[in-house]
Image (cartoon, rainbow, N blue to C red; front, side, top):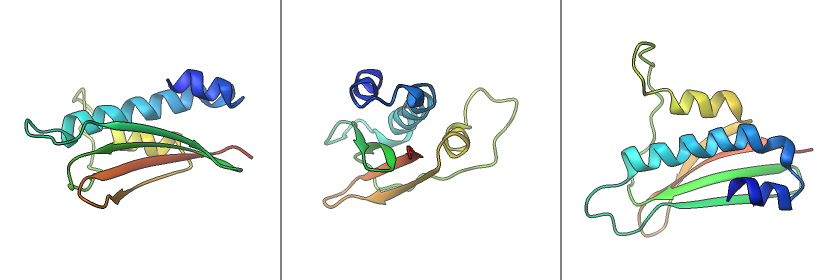
Length: 109
């Protein structure tokens, strides 16, 4: 989906970074945002604006993402650090009715 969308938008130069960021956003949402009684699935949204590309993943939990000090020996725990390093900005917002959206943006000027 990410590659096809960026190709349609003539943003192929952003594919590598966007693919890694989307992968980290989705992985974090699966790992921390789903529970057995999740009412809604994850949702991936790619949005193109005049000067930015936004990659966003929604999940059904209200828990804020927390960037933690990574354990450099561990195989996990660096997702938000990767997102921060590869994107222009990232953040999250609560959703009406519950859940949250975690996003990362890229400058495309």
